[in-house]
Image (cartoon, rainbow, N blue to C red):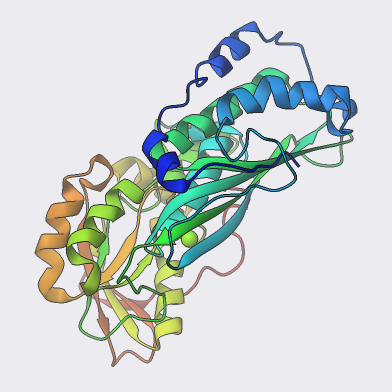
Length: 369
Ligand code: MG
């Protein structure tokens, strides 16, 4: 545990984005001997652990909460409702076009807070590392996490590092937990979808899943697909400012993709959802990968897109706001909530037919996040 005591949140928010020591990791990465590896001693809590934390993590994650290195982080938070979320990341490969496990771990938790209408504020980061893991890779990942945290305006408040013997796991796993402050007057939940509302999708379906398939290159598929992995609070925040009262549901379609996420919403809300195949944005490269492998892009994960269920008369203004963001250029209405579909998600196909889109059965693609 490297923990915290620290400053007042308002002050922290103002200075977030300015990490006075933010460049140290780059220097550290450059200096790193490429042959230097993690040893069990790095996880024993003694001198080697302290050196690892002092060299690799503290310079990049420095924050008023983290720096005192007490057993727990202390922070003054604004009054209001707190959102609290956790997620573990086991993605393979660790580095992929558009991101790496570190960026993914920060964006994943930040986005889970953001889609609950909460301004992400604090993060914990925990690393489980296999003996023999290259220190230079760890440095690169730490740097990426720090950069993504600054982009998202969150501060790393506490963390942990464990090392397990070679063979006990595969390389590196990362867990992040996050705390956000729910925007006042916002009330969103997967169970709030109402008949007649519109379903919006902020970006092309399946970009992250398709990028991971290509990065693995194990199926003989090569491609230049870039993961959409990124924090989304800066896309969601203006939407809440202007139209928050008209939004019932926000969800990031990660594992299981758009299809599974819509099914979760339909079940939780006790409604049906009808989507139009021709309306759903899918990149041609993602479609090509899916055609070769027999995958459906509707089941491939996004890590930088959001499904929004909003009153139908607000669709135009919502899309105008989302389109202004680089990650929302392809945002579009993909369907509507209905109360006469027996709780099913129905796809109106390009050929004019209708079919049930069920939850993902089994694991289509393991270790994508
Ligand atoms: Mg989520």
